[in-house]
Every structure is written in structure tokens, then in C-alpha cells.
Image 1 (cartoon, helix red, strand yellow):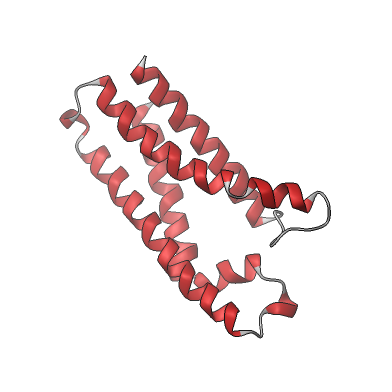
Image 2: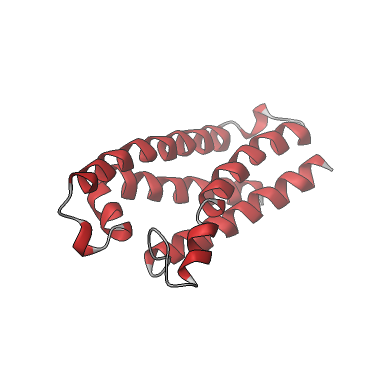
Length: 140
């Protein structure tokens, strides 16, 4: 189960790196409505997406290194600590979108959580739960 979750983390964070850093214009288009894309702020968002992608790349590296060195961590608490880091990474991506999702229910919100954004929202929750559950298993 550990290896499976680490592989899922690697894939998910790699997808984040791709969309935020390599395809940052697509990311910006997902959160900025067409009528607001002619502003300098839109270009700033594109560039800041690359910054966010860098964090995703760091988590790709972390999970690949963990997969490559499974035997280096022989204690359940060590694995729990490492999995908690992944839990927090996914959890913040989910958690900071919750207020936007709640605003969407009232027809408001900085961006719409639908389509690809809904997929990201739900997947980050799922990944947070998986990593957290496995961390709990190893910790207790």
C-alpha cells in the first residue's frame, strides 16, 4: 500500500508541475474568466503558476526518492512523518479551495470549482485522506 500511495503522489504532483509550470497559461485560463484575461494581472498569474509548479516538482522528487529508498526508513514513525508532509501538501491545496467552493454555492468566488478545478479539488481531498490514513496506520 505504501508504494502505491507514493506512486500516486508522484503522478499527481508531476501533473501539478506540468499544469502549473510547463502549461501555466492553461492553469491561468482555468481560474480566470475570459473577460478578465486582457489585464497585466493575468500574465502575473501565469508566471506565479510556474512558482507553484516548482513546489510540485519538489514533491515529485521527494516521492521518487522515497520510492527509491524504501529500506532506508525502517521505522513506522519515520514513514508517518514523511506521509504527514504529503498529507499537508494535498490538504492545503484542498483546504484553501474550500472557501471558494462555498462562495461558488452563492454564485460568487474568485474562480469556479467545476470541470478541471473540481477534479483537482476532489483529487487533493482523496490524496490527503489516503496519505493521512496511512500516516495514522504507521503512527499508531
